[in-house]
Image (cartoon, rainbow, N blue to C red; front, side, top):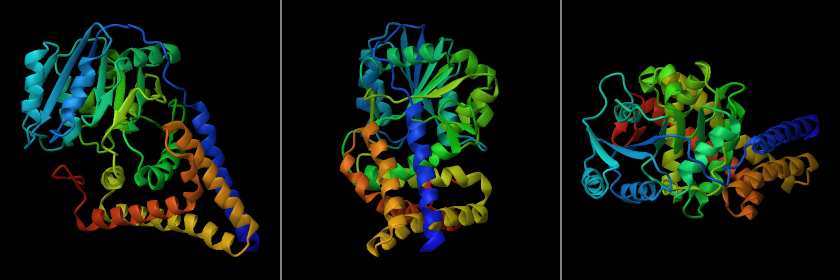
Length: 364
């Protein structure tokens, strides 16, 4: 391999070092919950009959005094609205808001979040996905995090309800790419946020123009956090430390489709041809990134072994933080190849169509 092998190992070491360093900056949610004013939780829900009951039940069990729960039924075709309506009958804090879907120029989820915040006057807004389930102290711990870091927006990701190949093969490379393009404290690039859970001070949300300001966004979480940051707010991504779980990534299939949707959404504004070329390049690069260490290590290359080890260390750091089996880090190069295949699949669908989510074309 010569100098190219050494160069490849150096690049891999640099990427791994960046990922590990960034995780050191991601603080866990404070253990002690606090009360920091009124909170309105907004849950966008489209065809979530299989998950919405657990989501609303978890929110109703919050150990937090001044709490309101608004579920926006985004033109569901299943029993989502009926399930939420039963919760609303049992608990006056729960409100069902119906939407006929997004008008022209709006992304579906963004429009649902906009509808859910109409006339809300609480101190804080909490946006959570319908396929999440919160522990009773989530809201109070998020408020504590906002106070501890002196920020206007706090976001965290849900942990898996199961251990599956999607978390071993797809999410570690996604995590690396996210850390390379965003910052956990909003200090550079785009501000990192995950749509599973975003708490924002209402005043900061209104100052930023609310969800209307990014009406057509398909990368709504990162775009929203960046908007809040760019309009004078401070943001922070934190480790949820087990306070939030998601069933939306419970199998390899659901994880694959979710990540494909996110990749397609992130490139949707570039146009089909540009998205195809960019995602194709990303896919091929990651396939090579994973394949070269495997092939060269098997041939006895020391730089190849170093590259394999560096990828494994970055994945080990990720698995340690998200409670996944750390032994899966050993197949890190295979994960890079799997992510590359995912990117190529997304590239083709972005060009030819078929990049859909909940019956809607992500590119529209």
